Amino acid sequence: MTAAITLHADVVTYLREKIATTAAKAPEQQIIGLWVEVTKKGCSGNAYHFEPMTAAKWQSFAGRNTFEQPEKIEQDGVTVFIEPQSVFKLIGSQLVLVKNAFATRLDFRNPNAGEHCGCGESFTITTPPAQQ
Image (cartoon, rainbow, N blue to C red; front, side):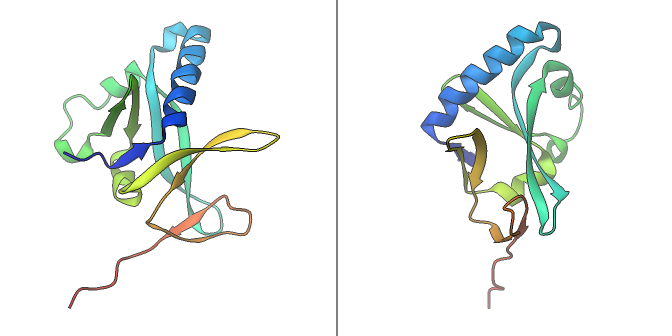
């Protein structure tokens, strides 16, 4: 089965380091990966949200039906979990690192993203044209 998203090679290295560093600072949280979610935010309506995925949060999905389970993507020792309602907004995307002189941040090359707001914080989801 093809994963909903792919991780750029430098993202894997970046996440491996960030997860290890964060887990070392807070071992009681039992960080097991990265949680990704598309939230309602900004003037365009949608924004990406990233946070550490903990063992407790993962356990909270135990017993839920298949449609309520996060998408789990494992690549080269890094695990990314996608919030169930966000999967369809991210299908076909590539998780990439955006670097500049001041910061490094995660972002998506998302074929489903349409318009972006002026500040670049939020985006709309495009709908495919109706098939005839």
